[in-house]
Image (cartoon, rainbow, N blue to C red; front, top):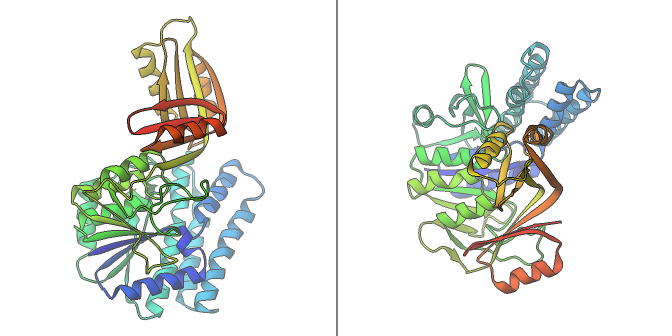
Length: 415
């Protein structure tokens, strides 16, 4: 068994869907699970739709029409003006409309998970139909009925026992299966998501349960690079990386791999490949046990839209352990992601990420007990295997607000 994962960039248009068919045909295997994300930037489009619904803004229909048109344009390009796929996708849009009309639950995160999951459902239905129309028989699976989770909407935790049983029950033959990344379910007609970019994690879950030979993430880059080419002009392809190195890179912000992906694969020594869907003839990057990194390179990860927050006690007393524990409790309650920590005798500084737009609530909660200062829209650079020359160059060319170093990693908060 092999597991493939295709992200939104690989299926953003009809040509992308056709390219996936070519890649699958080239594998010459019938023992394959394919995990697919929503098309293009459709998750963002569904998020805009949800915000419009919750805030009752006038552009609700505009957002919904955009999502419909986007998908049906792709369908028309792939299938012409008729076919069973039209009926199936119309059914999904009817379900979306029905939810918005009947929903009584005001919780934003609940609404988010019930609606945003349609991006993956629509995407995989289109691709499954297209593959079948071109001689690639496959079985479509609803991940909401397979990936069983708790009720933590938008960041659900997987119930591995039930999920494992569901996967083993659903995948019993050597054939091609198509399913969705990112989404799961907790009860009948109640759905969850695993966190943004969680499709990699879904593929890792299937790989782990099925004892897959390998898992491959198909990206629009040639493999794992030592730096994001959007921010660095010169990059190096890393041909081999250890599980530990990949986990460290993901933790510090490398977007090519979801942080939760590595451990399920490492537990069963399943090789992970990162390859280019634009150039599938290239070997890309292999992630396994063994060599930490080849070729040896300084590695950079880059996080934007960070907030540097400094917290101190109102009575000018020392920042003690119970203060820090209390602060982290407030972070947890507001679902704030902490990417860097630094403390002194009377202050505690963190670089945080406001993934769920809770910073205003966080400020209010902290201000009841502490003095706070903050810089918004800063950037966090993490440099693994750094050299003194590299650090000096960054300090000379950027406005550095905070720097922190260990033996392997240097982190800088910059303007």
